[in-house]
Structures are given as C-alpha cells and as structure tokens.
Image 1 (tube, rainbow, N blue to C red):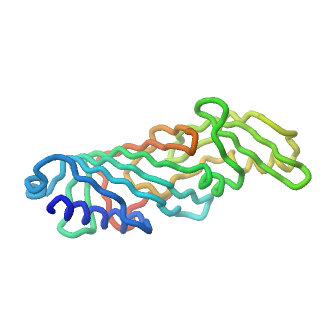
Image 2 (cartoon, rainbow, N blue to C red):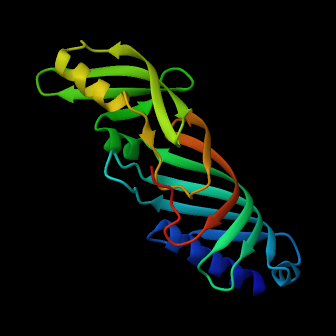
Image 3 (spheres, one colour):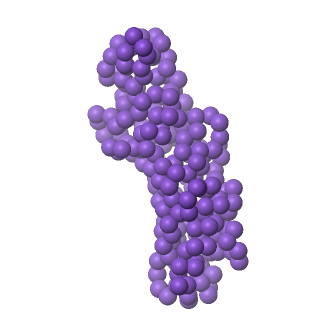
Length: 209
C-alpha cells in the first residue's frame, strides 16, 4: 500500500512534467519502502512512459516509449517534483514517428548502425539511400555517410532526401539534465540511450533545443 502510494505520486509528477496522455508505470525497488520514504529518498525507481508528445516546431519527433531508471530519488512534499542522483534512460523512436518527422520513409538499413531513407514522387518512382545514425551534440540524432541503395537519383528526389537527412534531429521531449550517449538502429525503430546526474522532474521539465 505504501509502495503503491509512492508510485502513484511519482507517476503523477512525471505525467505532468512530460505531458503524456496516459500515466506512466512506476515501480519502486528495494525493501522496506516505508523506511526509504521516511528518509525522503528511494534507492531505485523504474519508470516506463509511452507516446511523449513532441515539442518545438522544427521537425518535431515524439518519443514512442521512454524507459527510465532513477537512483537516489528524493521527492518533494507534493507530487510536483522529484530529484534523482543519477538517471539512465532509453528513448525508443518508431520508424513511423521518425518518418513523419523527416518527411521521408525511414526503415532499418541493410547494415548494422544504418537506416534506409526512401523518397517517392509520382512518375519518378522511389529512391532509397542508406545513412549511418549516431549521437550528436545537443541531444540530437545525426544521419551521416549517405549512400545510394536503389533507384535513380533524380535532382528532385535527391533534394528531398538531402533536406531530410542533412540536419541532425533534436530530441526535445526528454527530461532536462539527460545527455544522449548513443543511438542504435533496430528492426522496428531507433533507440537513443541517455544518462544524467542530478536530474529534477517537475512540470515543464522536458528539454528544449
């Protein structure tokens, strides 16, 4: 009962801060929870949220699923704020969401660490290029080493693909204080791994670029 109450408060704080439609799932680890709460600190908390809305107006990219592990979590007297000593998180970005943000069709590449980007136009057909994905400064995902894969690189389609891939895409809706460490292209989407120290969750605490 005590653990459930603590988890409910943390879920409310995160939902308010991240603006998710549904409350995240929260699990407090360690025993006894009552003793941890008495010291106003929880040793470890696992949190999972879905469909974090995108912020910003430049190629907004929502987070399909965010999993967060928080160590040394201290809570305020209300449900409005929580502060973690250290945090590790993984943001999963579905290829559908990435495709909508970039304006071209994104899928897993034929080689590890790469994605395919396909642009289509009536009569011209499809053109697909491959690009490496990596972490860039400012919590951004970069697409580099672009190579042709299929189709004739007509000027119009080449321009469309270049526009989609030339600028790194910012992840503007992760908690402030987290820093992007690595990016991985998987079968169903892109996984972005974050870490941070001394991270505070409060309403409006999503990072903005």
